[in-house]
Length: 300
Image (cartoon, rainbow, N blue to C red; front, top):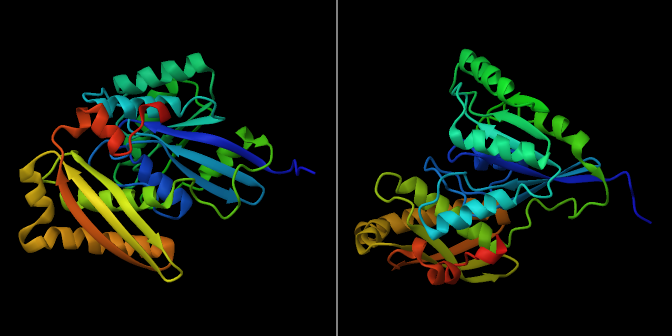
């Protein structure tokens, strides 16, 4: 017999690049499952985060930052972001306290209006903006759209994040949970490993290399006390390959060391990482290479 006291629903986190959606998702879950970087467009596909609190199961979709795509990868990212807003019980529009509405945010609100989906406004990064900035932003957005709620918060510090659950609960449906209560993501372990390795690359190579990096887990062997990972890092230029490897392999070792720390904390066992670097020119604009690297247009 089904327990109808259980409640659940899908919630899409949507916004422009670099507004802090992935940081917010990781804070909501208390675990790192999404790559975080100062670089925009860090998230490339919709990543599902699951949090079960008492009788409620919240299923968050962290979507790629909405932007004007310039490559085939960019087009896939936008399909992923817009598709994630279909059939959700609630959309959370994440913005910065800039007291102005970007054209892309205006376009999103027009789309949400046509869909008839309820929308909550999350004003992120309150830890680095003034109260006056936040008040002006609330005023500007509230005049432009009828939000179900407006929540100022900091995904980085966690301030105000708990309010999200209170505001989202009324939109959940009474239905059996989709996932077991101890799950925090539906992403395969390989995907989590690739995300964390790519995050370290983005952070350590923030100034040297743009977004032309991809990580593919070629081998993932798991035993009771050890996970052995072989990952290939793809870049677009031979000059980038030298930078990723670093002098005497120093940069690659640093990436592996930092990634191992996070992966061991996530999986709870020792992790061994072997990293290899390869060049695939213009991979972001090659449909064949994108499919080889695990990006599937049909899936998003």
